[in-house]
Length: 113
Length: 112
Picture 1 (cartoon, one colour):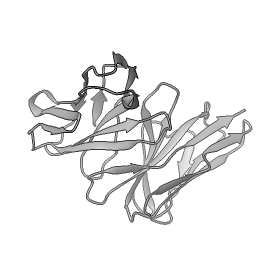
Picture 2: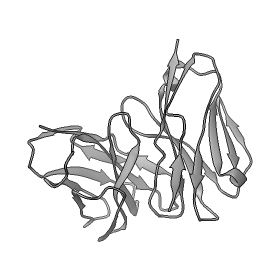
Picture 3: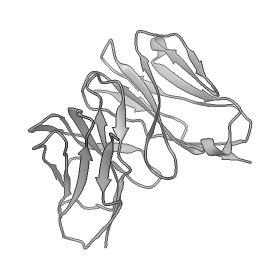
């Protein structure tokens, strides 16, 4: 069974600060996908990124970057120079094939001006 | 445009009544999911379906029922057996390659 731990319940930062959201997962599968989703106040989840378990190359996309380490089962997400519009709840999730998609408990990010 | 549609956005019901939440997708996705979210909480999986006419219980299936008679539709019924039905309900579908989940806008159910 898959399990996801997002230990940070809530993070508060001031605009322009960098912030990293942690995600640790458990899975017995050797190949899988990892996802990050954002949930703004409107409620709908927005896809941010997907990584393959066999691709540990970290990636930067604009203000977003990801640090995937299979050896420690961690898939952390960093926002550089945070903005007020980044305020949302962020969810991490592993997925193998078409099995059930289980999300972590989420991290609420509050960015103040 | 392709996507997932949940209706209604807000729903009010009296205690003891069954209520059905609609979820429709025109993305041709095989797999669909239902989640429940309580205030300040994460997403908990209720039921999921990987193919038409088949579905599996998630982590909190008690008090809920689903059907999957058509690929496009995955309705969720909240029965009177559900002790605390007031919550935000999200429906999702997964691409057939398993590469991304698409979500509806959610239904906020309030039972009074």
